[in-house]
Image (tube, rainbow, N blue to C red; front, side, top):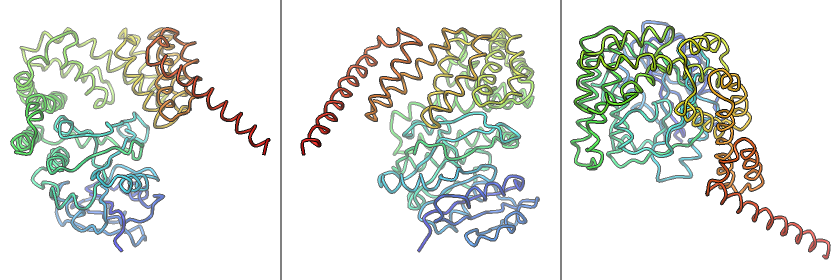
Length: 479
């Protein structure tokens, strides 16, 4: 009988990570799988790594020459015999329960064709966790055209999806294949859903950003235009064309300017304004907020120098935005610092805290909301203990860069969110404990109508449960 899963691992000069990737599959709690490793013309010791495993479920395929990531994935997919396909990039890894969780979800939801999961983001060059990425519970074509709601290593899809949407487009060798493939699945009517568990580690490899930005831009435009022109594309999604093109182009502009390709980066920015004129308006302008997000995820050392270099290359029509450069630098530093504190990276904290103080960075409402979202994700996916530990590590940061009232408000909001979650799980005692603790942290939050409602209902249902228990006990004694 065919295995339940085929795990396809394309490999090109990633021997330093490949062994760990394969081991993460062999260590799965669900063992009904095969592993298809495709060596895409590597010049390192990739073959030696694969041959070092004796497990007969591993199949090794090799391209004589490098053909690109889409072709390598296709070779593995077309060779696979599993009833479901799981993708794994050679520098990523699975958690031990990855396949089991996806298998259970697919069995329970026959109308879902593609599943994906939350993941840990590893910092460049190491194994240190730098964040937790949690995608939306359900994604549709409107989400897919705007970016990458999940990465290939997050995905599992039923084998019949290939018959309905085809495999990866092998002409897309500059990064747009991960935009194209899910969009085609959505256009074919395939449904997506998250299993809402953290099930793999994604390593950011700096080499992935060194492709030709001009060719990548051409690919993105071709893929998006193909989607918007497809008769199956809803009108509401077609209306998103300019915003989608702006979203992708601005990222390529930042990379180009960071690589000192000024003319190309400037050309991209001018196109971005044509797509979305509002992107350069406001304090801060959306384009500068985008630069903050980019800087947090794509700069390693001396982020301030990189940000200044990018802004200094802005076209003349954007030079007025240079007045916001100090804000961008401070925000990048602050958000990196918060990330380091949450994920317990003391070396990064020691480096970033003085820089944040020098830049007069402050925890404002925007940062507070970001912290709230991150900690709620940790609370729901990793548990209350992990969330509490992160909150505890944040206390000194509020003393230096914020206020105790902000810290209390953050704690209260997390407890209220937890209370709502417990209410839906019918754990009414836990609801009341969390509401009470939130009240002590920030009394005003408990006057919210929704909070008052679940508090009152939980009190009533706890009382009813107590009466039922008492009656049951009496009946038992009478018998």
